[in-house]
Image (cartoon, rainbow, N blue to C red):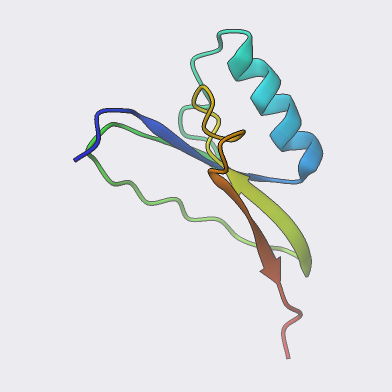
Length: 81
């Protein structure tokens, strides 16, 4: 029901920082790539992402001000047993 588009970007801290900087400089976003998806206002989308190794990755939305406001988190990938 929202009126603002969002992004869902998966990556390490360097990837998140680079994307935040690109968005701050006026970039239109990542569209739909292997690690990111743009979600239009009021819509839902699906991103299929394959985690290749255990560890931590970050996710976030880099629409203006969203990442800084806390629209971010951590994904912990556990080793397969």
